[in-house]
Amino acid sequence: MEYKELFETGMSFDTFFSIASASEKEKIKEIASVVKIKDEYIERIKKIDKKYNFLLSAESWCPYVRATVPVLMKMIELNPNIKLSIITEGRGFKFLREKLGIPEEKYVVPTLAILDENFNFAARYIGRPSKYRNIGFENVSSEYFKGHRSDDIVEEILERMGY
Image (cartoon, rainbow, N blue to C red):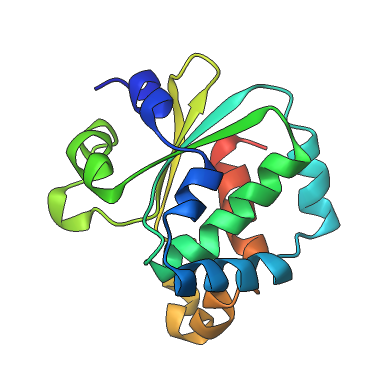
C-alpha cells in the first residue's frame, strides 16, 4: 500500500480520540493540558512553508503515543501546512514498517512518517526522541509521560524535517 492510500484511509485525531477508552482519553487530555512549546520552536513551526502529511501509526493505550499525539496536534494548530492521519499499529506493522525499512522486532508505536505534499517520504520519527539514548530515558521518563518534555519531541521532528 502506498503512502497516499495509507494516509487517505487513516483516521483523524477526533476519530482516534473517540475510540479510546475513558481512561486513555483522560490521560491524553491531561497531557494536552500541559503541553508547552518554547517560543523558538513555535517560530520554527510557523515558518514551515511547505505542505507536509504526517502519517502516524498509533494506539491510544500506548504511553509513548499519548505523549506524542498532543504535541503533533499543537504543531498542526500552529501551522495549517501540516496535516495528520492516524493508522493503527496493525496497519503500520503490515504496511508502514516495510516502507520505512524497520525490522519486525524493532517496530514500535508511535511511528511517524513525515511525507511531503505529494506523499513522498521526507523523514521519520520513531518511538521517542533519540537524544534519550545519550542521557538515559530513565532520567526523563516521568516528565516525558506527563507531557513535560514536549520540546524534545518537537525539536527532533523539526530537525528531521530540516527546519
